[in-house]
Amino acid sequence: MSAKWEKKGANDGELTFEIDTDTIKSSLDEAFKRVRKNISVPGFRKGKVPRRIFDQQYGEGALYEDALNIALPDAYEAAVAETQISPVDQPQLNVESMEDDKPWVIKATVTVKPEVKLGDYKNLEVPKQDRTVTDDDVDKQLKDDQEKDAELVLKDSAAEKGDTVTIDYVGTIDGKEFEGGKADNYSLELGSNSFIPGFEDQLIGHKAGDDVEVSVKFPDDYQAKDVAGKDAKFAVTIHEVKSKELPKLDDEFAKDVDENVDTLDELKKKIKDDLTKQKNDAADAAIEDAALNEAVENATIGDIPDAMIQDEINNQLNQYLGNMQRQGISPKMYYQLTGTNEDDLRKQFSNDAEKRVKTDLTLEAIVAAEKINPTEDEINDEIKKLAADYSMDEKAVRNALTDDMLKHDIGVQKAIDIVSDTAVEK
Image (cartoon, rainbow, N blue to C red; front, side, top):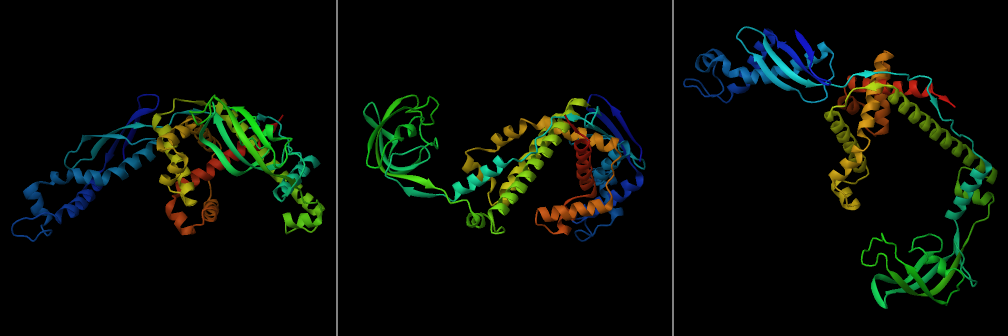
């Protein structure tokens, strides 16, 4: 094939290519097979007219448009491969010539990826990460586990922060009750900040059986606009005061928390190991993010075509909604539950779309610079990993993804590893 690429703008150009006569002939034959079944010619059964008779009556040119549609996709793809351009949007196609017994000439206006000139991407300095797990960290986790297993016990003494009270309350503004300001036998943890600021604090120091008048002011940005910014009084009756009774830190507690340990010391060790892994994972992720951001900043990248931004937004949207559907939540249900719509999600994903595109372009440039070319074994390993991650059959993964797609993803991950593994903490 003869193909020529001529750059016209920052990201645009003209791709001129030919469709050879052999391809044209086979495409005309295929086009005739498709249209013949709908043609009726006197003297022949419907769908049985010979090609010679068709050409005599209609002319071969009647098949040109269908033949072009048949030949064009492969011819365009071959021209893209020959000129080694990277289109990011559908081309605008124009037929330059379709002469008999000559190659057809097509000209396509194509938008391509911007050029990327890499800067430094190895041995980048990133902030030092704290990977230390202290005894205090372990104690805090143990305390959280105790809180989860705590029991609420009635107490006769005054309520303290952290206690749970059962109350009736009636709220008024200017002496009049307002909607949503009344409840019976409501359970409230003091210090949880689940009520209007100041409400919970005024119950501290009171006992079961006490009647308390609570004075508060609704915040100016309160969701109920009819009471926002207004002073209110609440007549509160305290029925019960309960305090948290934490389980004793001993071997039995350890067994309740984790059935795979027998002693408290074993639980502490396991907690420390788990926290250490979490900190290391978080540190590695922070290093990766910092190094990638620096590599992108060091690169010189041309203007990003809007088509790439929109593709990235679409990819993020589809991936997000796909994850929701795997959890049994349809897009319609998600929008109802969150009170949002597709436009809201698109705006959300558009915030960092350009940054994500620049990161992808930089990584692809690193793949090229490092001459990364994944092997067949690596492709097979990636298929197995994806099949396990998404609980799919390996054949289904293979059918859904081409080798080029798999090689791209593997190559990008290798590029990420090069950037992050060579990063230097300072």
